[in-house]
Length: 153
Ligand SMILES: [Zn+2]
Image (tube, rainbow, N blue to C red; front, top):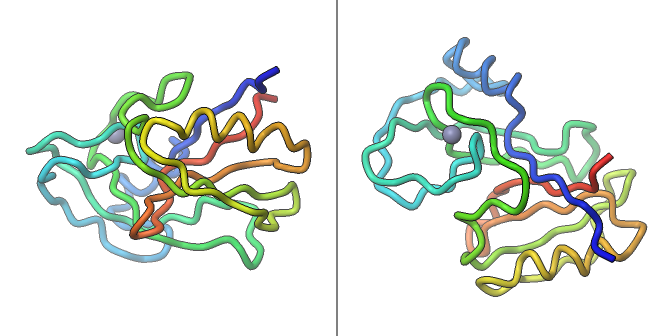
């Protein structure tokens, strides 16, 4: 029995604030750049094509805080874009990924490296453990956060 999962990028309220203030929540200026293509976008959970207006900002995916609440760089669209749809983000299906699970107190559990095309299966397996509250999907080499997965409430 697979748990129904929700896939969360940077929250819309935070994106609005960053775009309006022209700096992120950590004081870094929002600098417009043109995508080369291939940048993972944490606003709409898509991979950028070439020529899109994007920015690199700092984001802390674990809002509750704690020692594991890392701040890291994320690409976002410079202006409004559609919210991510339901289901595993299609653009991320064929990428290798680090899947990092956390319990409800924000403590990190044993993670896995998912090979291309296996992230959904590995996520379902991780969520079979009732202790797993959220899983962060991250880049394999840079370790940057891509999105957070949690059980549907
Ligand atoms: Zn976007």
